[in-house]
Image 1 (cartoon, rainbow, N blue to C red):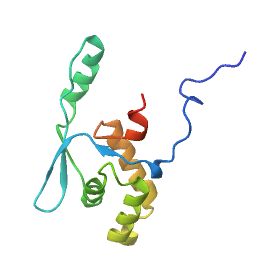
Image 2 (spheres, helix red, strand yellow):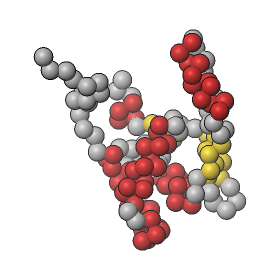
Image 3 (spheres, helix red, strand yellow):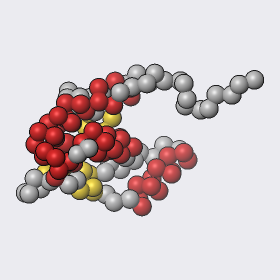
Length: 126
């Protein structure tokens, strides 16, 4: 009898560069051009969401992005693919951000994990 590991083989492989992330939180633009993301307070509905509330209370309410992250955030509008943003970041910052695919991929994955971004192509299906 073969066992399937949870989460493996259940979804088709998706290329991150083809996704169009959408912003899900409020943000502020500082004078120097950097972006500060404002963490949304979680809705408490039952005992399972209590962990999210604890996590929120222990985390930083505002997240400051560096100049590269701020530039990328301004381009992640739900219409532009991650691959398109990679090209724009590379054009704007040059060799300083190489390897830009890896760097931007990590940024986008982390922002989604923290619920600052969503992937409409994936998240709206469920």
